[in-house]
Amino acid sequence: MRCLPAALLLALLLCVQSAQAETIAPISDEAQRLYQTHGDAVYQVQVIDIASDKKTSIGSGFQFTADGLIATNYHVVAEAVQRGGNNRIEYLHDRGEKGALTVIAADVTHDLAIVKMDRPGKTFLNLGTSKLPKGVKLFSLGNPHDIGFTIIEGTYNGLSKDSFVEKIHFSGSINPGMSGGPAITHAGDVAGINVATAGNQISFLVPVEPLRNLSQKAASGKTGNFMGAADKNIEKQLLDMQEKNVSDLLKKDWESVPFGPVMVPGRTHEALKCWGGVNHKEKDPYQFFFSVCASQDRVFLDEDFDTGSILYRYDYITAKDNLDLSRFYDFYEQQYMEPASDYQNVKEGDAGNFDCNSRFVDLAGLRWKSSLCVRQYKKYPALYDMHLAMAMVGEGKKGLIATLAAQGVSQKSALALAERFMSEIKAPSGDKKRGGKP
Image 1 (cartoon, helix red, strand yellow):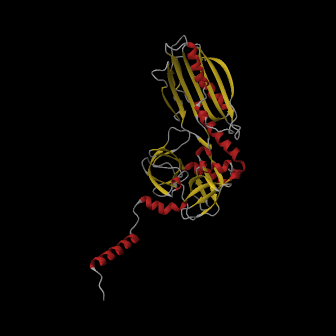
Image 2 (cartoon, rainbow, N blue to C red):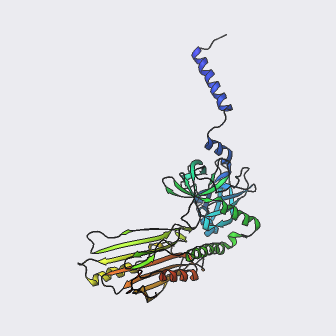
Image 3 (cartoon, one colour):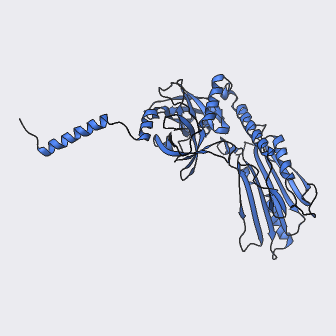
């Protein structure tokens, strides 16, 4: 009998032992375990342009019912909703399986959509809860940058307290292409849906509860034929959201803070963040101070079309001695006429032109030139963008401009916001010269 060299025999023995260990050793890495157990429920969601047969958008999604319902973000499938005749939706699995998807329901305010597979997969995820202890691990799944399916480990940091729409703050790297994928717990239950990132491992998830609500409405038939009346359904969702937000805002006692010669609304709601600063250089012939408060919510409707924000701003400008009155007023008028940057939210064809009504008003014992402008959305005619601008006049080489902007509101809400905002601009307490009614 021929004998093998001792070194070769030892090497073969170690290979056999290693192979046996890989076969029988339990999986200890949690991310690996969760991916192997639940990864089959995760798909890439693609919107395909029919004419070119090319992808126009990609994201992720996950099957959450045995009959083949997949959850994803609305912004992943928006192109197919807005221009359904030009696009089709498909799912793709990393095993190579692919098939057609049909939009069943959508909740644009929470950036959610439910689509149905033509052939249901065998694996689906259970919907859990977003009410978790702060600091627990979550595992986000998806297909970032179309490079392959990925699982990301991160930390649950609670529900946001500075938004009209609840979001989960997730410390993990959600990248483009992962939108719509699930974030699951140790037990494999869905706690949230990937939606956005602010970079540096600051990411956001849609809580699972709105998805459960949307699924229940779809199952009960309350969403009807969503695609058959998509514009009407979206319009109602946006209107309901902003009516609630504006109502919540108007019910609160507004903080009053000094700015320039008057008292103005400060932070009026926890969903708004405020900041300020200077907008001039040492060599400029004027001094320019500003303060801005704005909501953090934007609802995606279509490419270059979003809505839902509320913003107000103050600009106080005073001239230095070397700037004459006429030049100051030219600069002051330019600032007053400059359109609010908040109104770059639509592309041509999404809304009409602004229709403005201008007049002089007396507030806080001062004279103001005011202009209230609104423009109507074309697909959603119950909704308007509103812009109120007021400029203090007759005070020599100093001026204050106050602006208020609200997107996607009803005419009634627009007027109510404008009236409340104007009524909250007051003379400083004890200022008899500037006392009196607005």
